[in-house]
Length: 584
Image (cartoon, rainbow, N blue to C red):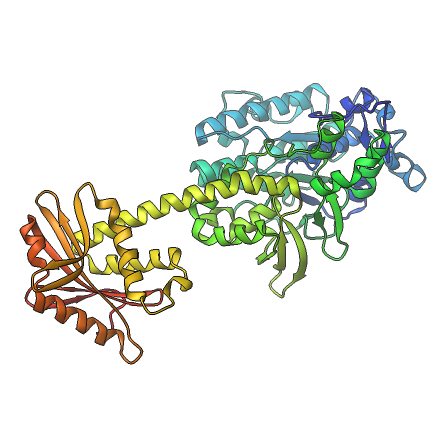
């Protein structure tokens, strides 16, 4: 149901306070029945993770405006809503009845724990003073004037506030006779910043105690509601909150209470006189599917409202610059080798299968490359095309890019950072390769060479009769970056024959000789290494490298089979030093 639709409609871009937008007569898609769902639910604490710009803050301020005791009568903001009429007006018994402890952490994104702590202290002391001013609690008769003074002193240390929610909920209950609601919007914003900037342990230590004190076994609490992007795993933040219920994008609770349904978008387009543009809007902005048994197609509200606000500008990626994707970019760069193939599949219009868990182990994101797929999904960059729960509580999902708007973000932003990461990784790999070769580290040389082959060579490159020449050209190409300090030549007359690869220093320093062999159909890697080693020993290819001024010459037998390789150092005395893939 569309409320407050003026002609033309006045869309509330950037306004997330329910009371303000309703009294301004701005267009509102009625989501008030989410309050009925919440009041009917017997659960004590509810977590609602949703992507950015899906209406979380607006729904939380709606809940606050309906429940909170106040001298400001907000009947005018609700009397035309579905909630007001539901069940014959039964929910009005809860109207403006309760003390509400409301916190928003959306702007707590500091670069260090000290600054974060100071920000939190300012926010929490302001909240305590505001509750006192609204007569939700009475600090003078709290029973602990010293404690009350701490919670209103902006110079108090952050540790003072660990038990704040427990204390002020008790004071609210005592002062009003009603148990309070605790509403926390964007609860995980500080945790994202903490993980990204390296103060995770300090932040988790505080928030674990802070949330548990207010939400776990608190006899003075009526209900707690939290919103955010992710459900951070219990080991990280919700330790001990066994009664926590989650309404995420992969279960059916509140599935259509956040985001716009297709019918709601059609109604908005009709109110704007732009129903003929529905196909364009669907192509650009729909495609999110939330829920498990009850699969529901949804749109990002931010994009729809921005599109309808300015007739004539056409569809564009409005969501692109509204979300902070630094965390995702960091993970993509870190796990580029694993993630890049999946991104290519997604950009080709395919789905990617993965196991998705509601609990996101933020503290282990660096160690789990495919965790970035879950982060992309819960953040709104991917949607779940199909879903099936397994016995472990995880979901076997096929993921895809939801629409053209998000596809542009993958193309312009994520694909670009993966390419940068690939170039950076390749450069680092080449440096490690040459350092190992010139330093005589056989194992590292072998490992780096095989890793680069796996990443860069195609099996199609290795078909045909002249495969050994392909390997030779490939290896010479890898060593070209040494041209400022070394001359890299191939098939050069040296000693008593023609060497495959010579690496000769331009100034006195280490050099190398490489004899390359491909395993033939009837021989083993060990036999091929023996052939290469014998050739190095008999033909003294190192002579020209020594003549060029090499202080040390490292001779390597290098054997290839597909994308596998074996490397052994062959010393002048004929001794051989195996690499990690050695068969001897």
